[in-house]
Length: 464
Image 1 (tube, rainbow, N blue to C red):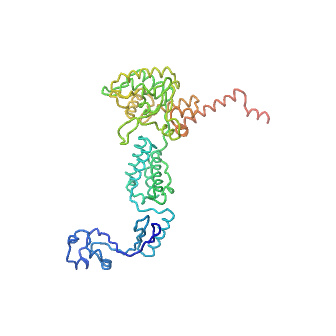
Image 2: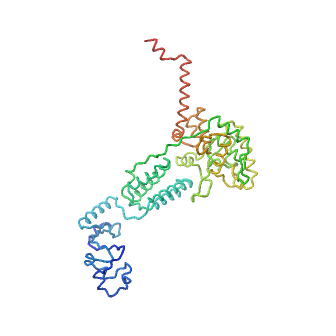
Image 3: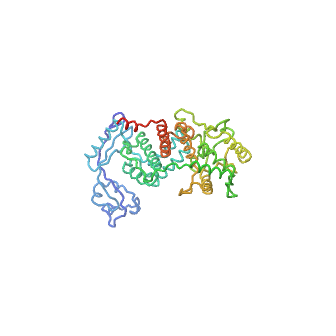
């Protein structure tokens, strides 16, 4: 029957009975001749009595409760378990399919039946990555949002073994109206899930090999920095005005002012600024950026993450998982005066139990969206970037800092280390600014040639 836990098994014919959606009015011959209807509750339900179960011929001609089909069953013992491996209409097809499956068993390519859905496998995958520290809770929460989107499109409920490249392609194509970043996240999530399914032998072939990553219909957003004049205008407004217009606001005007100034002068993200500890992260001449505010696993509560996104990548590559932002990126005395003022505010807040450099009046973490809301209003009042349809965003402070660095001629590698963004992403995000700077540099080169009378054209003319 089997060799080493796997055998040819047997092939036999049986009657497969599927429930009718609605019983027929006339009874079949088996039911008409039946005197005991307790098992089937007088034919109200679908339970089969022994006569109905053993019927092998009459039900093929007519059955008022079931659709009946003659099927050939192929069985074999695989890994010590005797199981049905194929069901076909013909005996020859059953034998052929069974031989194919047994060959797959021999070559290690056999995949047993598994009803796990796309959503279930995605969640297992993300939980595994989180428990192994390969992702942060922030990334986990973000990936859960991608999984929720896949579920909302109906793909998450499909068993992994029934997922096809066409289904995946249609799923991805359905979000072409969203940003390329969202498309990339969903593509990567499904791709990782398919690789795991292949590795775990849930599927025998990866459907992603034939999937093409869609291109977003939306035009790519470019970094929008403040010009030098706009930055001056914004700083002057922030320094000389009360920034809080609501007496019930849970953040004081000095804290809001200093958040904006440090964001402009260092390029730190708001999450990184909000996670700064004035006792451990403020060194003699620099900031040590090692943490960021992030969402907990539930996607709602704000916590201080174990490290920053860049720190996580560096840790994987066995590099330092923090970065240093020196005070002398701008006038050191200016930053020190801002810090001195803010540390006094932080120390005077009795609710500040975590020694945060920046926090709300009740001691809780600053909220990114709330800071942006304030910043949008402040920029309007300062009459800066009034042409932006959706107003200004606090992340524009980072764009502005990077732009000042580019304008000052700082190399991209140095900028990358300061702001915690790879040179590849910097080149992509600030391409238009880099091009503008390059054109100005070329103009300087052109003037150099002219000033030194290195005019090749005039020399060529004279030779001619």
